[in-house]
Length: 117
Image (cartoon, rainbow, N blue to C red; front, side):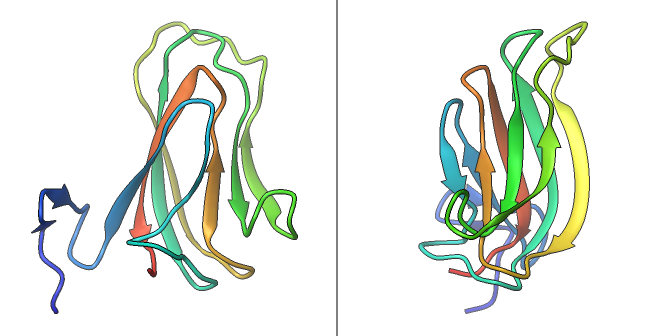
């Protein structure tokens, strides 16, 4: 089935691209449906802080603590002046496994990319 700009109420970023959400205080595997894989593409993250000192958020290629590699970290200790969403472009392809986002208790994120599943 060809990708659509929407799929049963699930909007996508662009044709063939999907989005996924990592809620605060969770680790989320970025997938289209069930399972991601090596070769998945990550276009960008939007970070949504709920506090001006949101804590560390990390992006992993593969399972955190299970052979995955942290490829990017929003470091703890950064003090924000407001709670505007933060756009972070990536344009990366995973080499080990699916992408994972680990969100602190005071930040959530939305990711877009070509996720298998």
